[in-house]
Image (tube, rainbow, N blue to C red; front, side, top):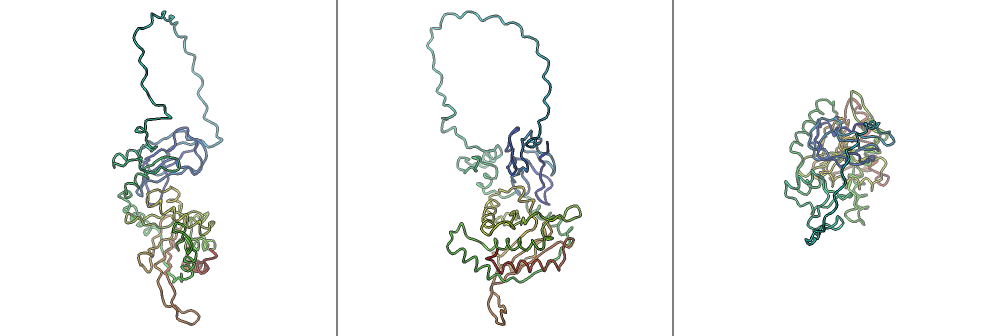
Length: 392
């Protein structure tokens, strides 16, 4: 038997509120299942379970706020024997004898009234049909006057709190910016940052993207960020000290390239959920993951691992016309890469001055884990991979 704990969803989280229990007591759970929704400063977060088994019981009620690490439920692992059952109680004394029923009297002369015409569960009244929705989703919909029947359910046929939030256009929790500020203040206070920048020629990247997108519909097109992510993942193979977590006074290297992608929530804050296993995915798979993540992030639908397991972050303000940016490391990560706006610049190529599309590539890294020499090599490795986008 193991405890399912309130997870830590980032350095800025101290507590969370359980707002949905998606699996009943006694229900089967499988690794990767969403079994609860927790509200934090970032909004409603879907919490996954990481084992197969049976949920034996909830320990925290809906609406209760508890610190990180508090047991929320108990889960009996698959194959684990059940707790011993209590012994049968002593037999009850025999019940007193009941006299036989009286002889039936003469039949009633009143006409028999037929029972009311009540539809069976298979054929309910149309006006009584209700979409399947979690209690928290129903309460929020009632407060905001949202008709649940107009919302599209998820694949399992249910509507959840985040779906109602998205339909209402609700911003994340009002203290998101305070939470971001607290995490960044902690980062600058505790992490000895160093900064590097490098001029990156992205002409080959943009040409490759344009060529691949020429015959694709809009929903299948690439964006340069997919190539940046792949180039970072390739560079991390040789320079793994830039991906991992610094916890308890030591560095814990990552088991894969789980790269956080900074996403602007359209004026409502900033999040950097992870795209997992970028090192094991091709360009199209990475692009599909980026598209899915951006859509869910802007609808307020995150998963716990996406907020807690990123091992390095990529951030860009390129669409804002910024030449370069120097990020602040998000603890417990140890590095963040930034890319500025691509723009034409004069460059010397083979002794000739030509126009090339350039962008400023930057690195902020933790001096407890790496140094400027290794950081420079890491940036150059990203650059090298981006000059051969067809190999990514």
